[in-house]
Image 1 (cartoon, helix red, strand yellow):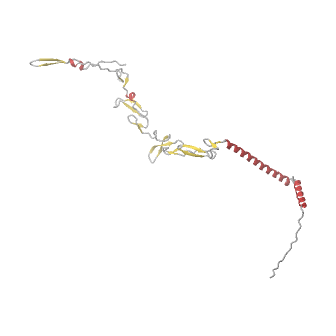
Image 2 (cartoon, one colour; image 1 turned 90 degrees about the vertical axis):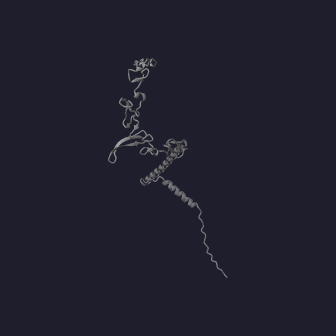
Length: 262
């Protein structure tokens, strides 16, 4: 709380000047120069203003410290304040950034990590950028192949461009999806039919193989020929057909000699 205080100066007091000489005496009053002046002062020097409601703390008025620096009063300093800067910053207002890992050290959202290693003779603090997928280089400035960890299904081919990747399907009418993993209905039907035909063919081949194998076992192991009767019938029918055919008469060959008479 403040209380106005009236302070009187020499300008508020009437001044009378007297001049004496051998002949005349003159008296002059300086009442015309008297002007009352009221000067208000706040009891608390930390506040200013007509109602003493404005702080004169430079840290609160201007908040001069940058980069999360902490401002504190210092009456001996020319600005009446000083800034306590975080590690890596310096200056009257912490405006200079001397960090190795700055906000823009690593590109493309790469993370900068400081580490200490022996370089030549001196120990020197260096950094390493941990890059996001698709980027490479000391500062993550190089665009990497986006298709390194991408596998397109069904013989699809991955293409990388503009920091993106895309699977190009072998036939868009048969395959679709982000990884070409979705098959069309017509392809599913064709695959089902081909599988059924293949299974039938495989079953037929297995049946024939088993039949031949069983027949050989019966014939050579147990001396049983299941088709012996049928074989004999076929041989007899073949013999009868040959007997029924008429025999062709053999023609005598005539040898002719030609003589030329001149």
